Length: 266
Image 1 (tube, helix red, strand yellow):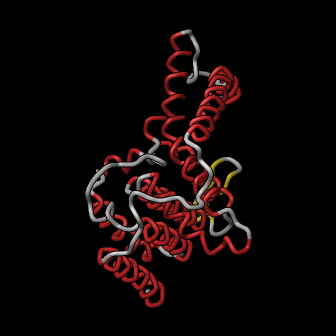
Image 2 (cartoon, helix red, strand yellow):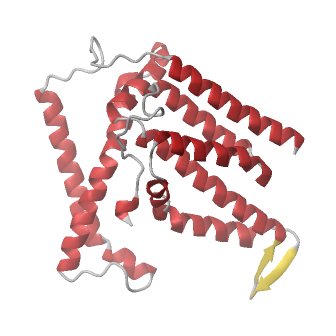
Image 3 (cartoon, one colour):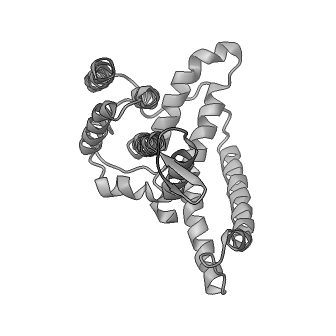
């Protein structure tokens, strides 16, 4: 399950999506997230499905790799499904003990599951097709206008990127610690929820120690390289919009237009 988490990982390729400017991909991801919250009907998900399928196909990221990233949120999907199906009032379809399942609850439960699946898939594509360095540069350039009000754009972008970059590293560390504890007789799968939570203590303690050690090593490495922030910093690859970004912008514009057309007429 831990190895299936794809958020924060980068899938190297030379596809059209990989070659787009990181600033454009960040803004396109925000527009995609906003569009998901504007959708309020199953018919309006047709443009979303087409957009996701075409984007994944163009990015050359295997569909199996995308689907694998949905396994870790399976518990969240089941929880969201249960909350909506049992707690949404409306026309009762059938009852289970003291719980009533309504038609509106079924509709809302499936609707929420689709929204979560597309949300995770769309945001995962951003990190899968953008290297951590380009993601940092893109975030910093987008936050630069806020420097006038005292926002530390470079430091904030660096912290967000380091956090994303260390997600796969911490997952690998968690997997190693879990296997080591299981070799010593630890059991993380049997028992009720309380017992499973207690069994995680031997896992969390060394994980936190490892995370603090890595953070200290990173700080020492940055200090040894005379890191002084983003002032007067040069870059190997300077961000610049190209014709491919214009084509990508047209593609995103068509997607938003389809959402609006379907929302108005259907």
